[in-house]
Image: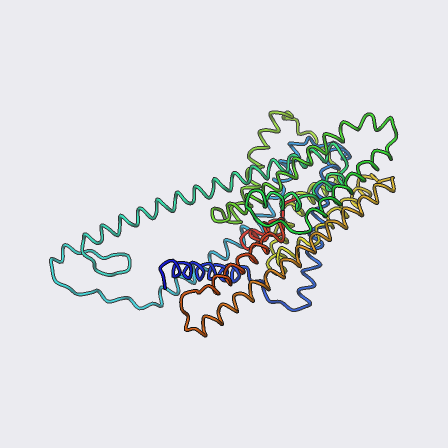
Length: 466
């Protein structure tokens, strides 16, 4: 067989092994049906919570006994989230690391000590290495130099990883600020309506930037989502009286513009997670999100909004409850619950319920803010958007399942053919099998823009941003 054919066969087997490793890494936990249904209920609850974040932000800026300035509110939401992350993330991680360290020490203590190797030469020219083996001095020097190079490379890799996490954290912090500002200027359910377009924008960006195949249902879903959004906005304008509309039209326009910017930043965040998945860990990104927000928005709020924090003493218990719910319950615990759901159900199943966000935003606006959509056109638009996005996510999920089945069939066929032929280098049939599997894997990767990016991080991160 020619060298080129052997190279193709080797690369094909390497690609198949990488896909098998990815599949093994993404393997979901096996649970009972009752447990699975419980996690489905938790996933729905998680999505409902994300939809309430804008409602809480608007309440604290417009309806609370002492409205909170926007930047100070962004700082407080992340500061309140810190105890939750320390209690439910940092503490379990520290305990797990301690147990691993003790287990490693016990395993090392149970290993028999290697006997020193014998040999001639000057005993003074020999030193003991870290494993207790006796090596010549020159070899020990080379080993030490290699160890120093490895340490420097590890430090550079860690600094690069932290820098990437800090950059992603800056994007998330800006996204949160624009979201909270948008919730101040316009109704929370209108802000959430804009965020419903995130999966569509991410799918388009995936196709343009990463050359991934766009879902077949993307154009239809995009058309109906935009049409439904226009219906909601027009209905909201028609239901407002003319005097109020004249005064609030500018606020609504600016709020929707900020919501659009925040939505694009969220899409950029998802794309950055995909692009930096080999540079950062999920824990690094999660801590960077909160740390950057606290470090940046504390001084920034004092500089732009003044050092007047009199609202802290003026807030009523109900206002503090809303702030605690937004910061601790949604910003911290909801992230942890998303991790758990994604590891049991898969990110694709969790994202199937994204339409629940708009539903909870509507209900929360009606109950907490007394903002009730009054036009039938608005309600019809909400129905169109929810139906379009639900159908889009379901089709993506089914397309991903079909692609996974195709990859499994191709891998099984290639393995069977290799076993029949005594595992020779990949032939033309094997090339076609690898190509088909790669194409199917590409289709699976593009089957969920928001699903895929979040799914890739859920093994290490699992964070579903607001």
